Length: 248
Ligand SMILES: Nc1ncnc2c1ncn2[C@@H]1O[C@H](COP(=O)(O)OP(=O)(O)OP(=O)(O)O)[C@@H](O)[C@H]1O
Ligand SMILES: [Mg+2]
Image 1 (cartoon, protein in one colour):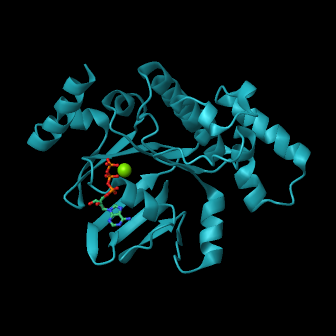
Image 2: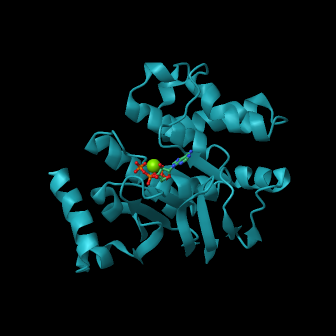
């Protein structure tokens, strides 16, 4: 089943069109990787899919329902159903880790009793391996710990759909592999759908059920990882061989 349907979507800023005529679907309970060169529009596409950047044309449907970018109610519903791990983690520096992870609960469910909140936050911190860090501030954490904290915050409302912009950028291979396993566990164990922007070939090969390649404002290729590795398309080969060379 498909959870997201994108039809004839144009996205850009002001008069500049970054992505043109996008048509694709995202399968529910799967991990879809979005890849492409720097500046190809990956973060831009993500911004539109999470309701932050109204498209210039076309539509996005979430579970069949069209996202109305001019309706606060519609966007509110969208925000409660999704979790987002931003490219730079985007933790709030004045809040402790606990408060950062509790934030979506306080914003969207202010009536929820504090005892319930505490149990939920602690379970989540435990799951990302940050049990003993709840009173720390973001500046006291390493980059990998910040990513994991941001993932805990993205998951706290138990969203059916999680968007991750370069979750493993800047992480060592072991921490990055740990994050991949966490995503797989959530997908397989809890049926969470992931849309992950990443440059890491190893991560793509390990986690992605499907890969979308952006190039020149369009979807250049769509398929599974094995398809891409088998492809004799010069651009795909260069893109992936470079990554492989770079990795070693
Ligand atoms: N807020 C903005 N205003 C105007 N143009 C923007 C804005 N954000 C991004 N762009 C432009 O949109 C294009 C795509 O940028 P985007 O950030 O989506 O790329 P990306 O694929 O995520 O790159 P990276 O791999 O470096 O993160 C670029 O040409 C960029 O200059
Ligand atoms: Mg980006």
